[in-house]
Image (cartoon, rainbow, N blue to C red; front, top):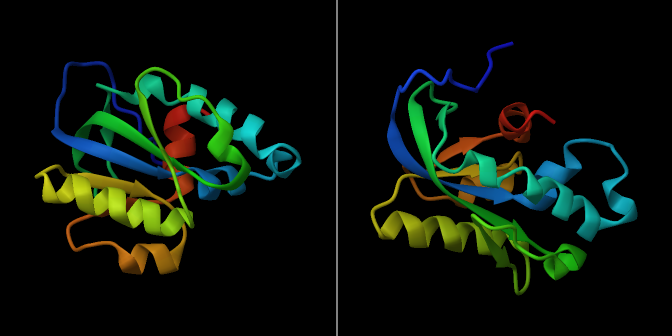
Length: 144
């Protein structure tokens, strides 16, 4: 299995904004997250600040530096408190539309965007140039 983590050898890469479909990533592991979505989202987001400024291998095999993590939450998970270093977007309706909107907004501002989701319908709605990774990519990096 190819590890997405890069060694701390000073290697660098292109800056990237990582937009996370939190519900999709939580749903990728049957660990009881459905019993308390807010607690599961809090636990997942607590791992994310360590990604900022970290060099990782993107799914396209390019080294990237995580400039910012944007976590999109919906439903009961909207009640969580954002950990320092993570931007939380509370989806007003559905999470997919909020993810597409966030990716578009950052992309329009000139940022390279990497969206973490396994949702095929959501992937199809993303603009050309957005890099997509599945939950296993992020779970590997986070060590979960």
